[in-house]
Image (cartoon, rainbow, N blue to C red; front, side, top):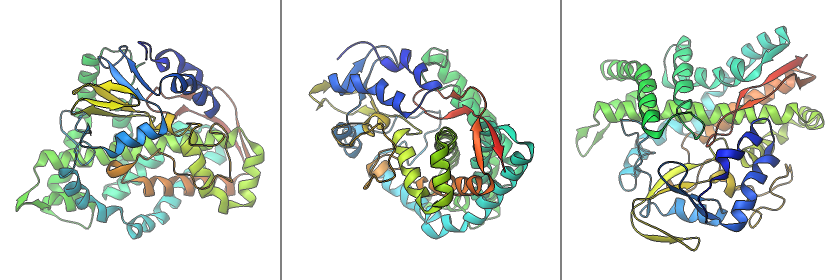
Length: 394
């Protein structure tokens, strides 16, 4: 136990670093205190760093509640607990089915190929700002059935939201909430208009499904529907942009691996799972204790904030052999990067599709690609890439 939270000061070591740096940042603290208390952030919180403790807390939704709204409008199913959570998840599940996700592959591949052809023609680009951020925004627009040109609004909103999250945002927590709400106000009218249009002219899509859904004979309120759609946009953009950037960065640093995956593209799914494990795009998710509880040998009081640090659990040497090393032979690979239990990410199949397709197209269209400048990474609790200067050679 202690009052310091190492990521406040040490996350800078990861900004231009690698998965090994992440392992070092977490390693000493996990070894000495896998359930660690800090007074530095969030008015005090518990960081759960050990794999088994993270899983225990993630599965115990009665004790560790996810009703911790980030925005003024609560966004189920993420910000809800069973049994309410199950009801909302059932409404959304059909729109994330295997067949629906598979049907999106042609449009994802079209977007990726068009964007890459333009990038390769120019040869030197910032791959993050020009590819890994816009692509998920465009895919979200296709998924929601809105105009492709609207991706810029989605991208702008998500960038503003991201700037209000994390210990290095430069604001006190109350100021962060105000900035977050101001960012939300940019997109909320757009989503409200979208929901209203689907009520009037239904389509076979998620927004229509939510707008027309009934619970106990009553339609969902506009606030709930808007919140759920905004959750899809936030989660569908954040995690995917980070995972895409992390994967491309890893390949840009390893030309041998680039060549192997060009020659053996069937290994890409295995490689993707390793990159997800090594650098979980969303390192941590917050919970609140609903009652006094013991976890990892420590007493957590009712009402205290708890951070489930999935990124640290992925690197726990008590569970994972050689946790800081990338291995194409690692099997099984039950990493925690998309969560565990009822709150496992509903959009994980879509994120995996986008990562695979972009990497397939990138590797097949180039002979090699190289870093040409400094890499700028996101702030904790995200681990992504904000700037990724590359030279692409056809």
